[in-house]
Length: 386
Image 1 (cartoon, one colour):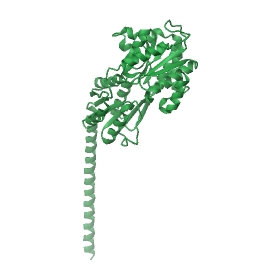
Image 2 (tube, rainbow, N blue to C red; image 1 turned 135 degrees about the vertical axis):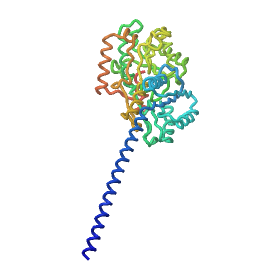
Image 3 (cartoon, rainbow, N blue to C red; image 1 turned 90 degrees about the vertical axis):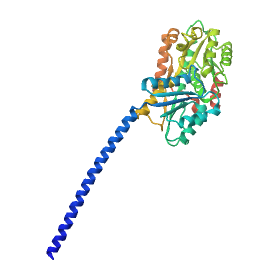
Image 4 (cartoon, rainbow, N blue to C red; image 1 turned 180 degrees about the vertical axis):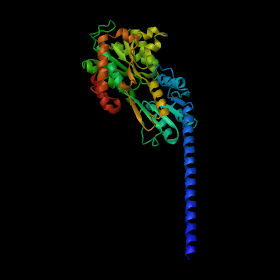
């Protein structure tokens, strides 16, 4: 019996040892497999990071506006030149019925990121992103409605345009007392010509009006709207009317219509503050007569922000489940300090502008925004300065 029991115990011990060895071997094989998987994942990541970014920009209009659309397109060209990206720019024109088809087409292709912007195309862009959760989108000049885009696949980029236009208002108001020969100091009147009476354009208006009031609340500001993003002749006519009504300087967030405003300023020999891109620098060589009266531009550096976003997506520092607000502190908005600005604007005014800029960045000056105001509140502010 003892002998039988000893044999049974020896058999159990042998089986236990074999089982233990089997577990050790399986664990070793599993660890080796995990290491190989990790190596494969790292290799895949490296290969993905080495692949050129494929980015497409859907323009809800046409290039050549000397402003917003051209600025965004410049970001795509920089992605190509600096990041080696494969890019495409699609001009969708003004036929809004075609937009959905364009968004669907590029979403079904192999682009890494699909870029679009501005309020007029927001709905179709968000609905498309919701339908293609595996695609990445960048939407600029607006936040993103996360109740619509629920999968975190659309980055929003907004710009504190009101901060740049506040500086424009401060500049215009101070220029009235600069002694410049093109300005009639007895007429305390400025002008504003916007493309459309919508929140994005009125964000420029609110900042501008508050900047003027910051210097002198008694200054009158005459506002006007073209009623179109690209009607150059009408913008020319309406801007001319503002000058004829006594406006000494006109601020023009007029989108693609802005060449009409610049032409009007040249015709009457008065100053203009342009918008979005440095219009003086763009025109000074090709059309110096029109450029000469462009005092400066409020800048919305859309192209720079898109390059930043592309780099951020590539290195993981930015994600598609957030909206990033960019202002004076990041350099995304500001005033163009070009040759004309530096020649015409006095050092005292420049110094004061720098001081106001710092106060805005530090939060000592809070600039109102049409994006956070009701239509009635915007109208009340606008009417109070007519």
